[in-house]
Length: 209
Image (cartoon, rainbow, N blue to C red; front, side, top):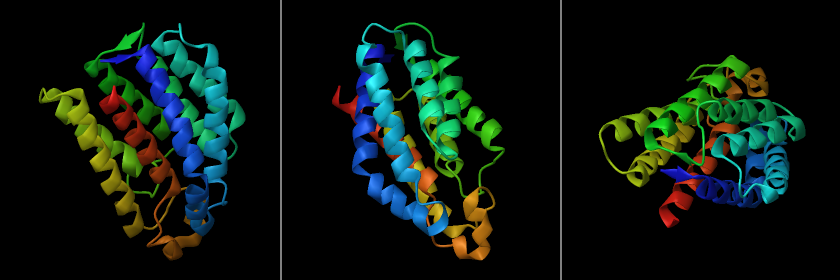
């Protein structure tokens, strides 16, 4: 179960990870995109941290909606609308001051649905979905099998990491990277990478709690 307190702690940790990986994500994006992914993600999560400073008493759905609206309004490029929509759709599934494991599965599914709808993308096009969808499928299967949330998240993160590696083997067919055609091969997708980093941070925060 994820409490509102643990959710806030996770989001604060995500801000730290985006700050630490700003240059790395931007370098990845420079090879196949606009060279601003790390800058945008850092800016967005910095704004999120500021917005959540007084959110200690907020419900999980309110927290997620605050994250969504902050990312949409502060992050440039595709990242803000995509991540913002993901958090917004997730906020519509959860309710109250805690999120059960089963509801977390539903929220994850809703988040991915939001990304697919907003980005008009599917798995296999060298996008964040190539990390998120395998992570979700693995997470759902693990939770359905009855293992602990921590173990399920660990398996999910491993699947996301494999998804990031997979993006190196395919040609981009969505976004700015698609303009490169075959030249996008061998480069990992920055959006898939940031998705992996956020999921890994969530898992590590839950594990520490």
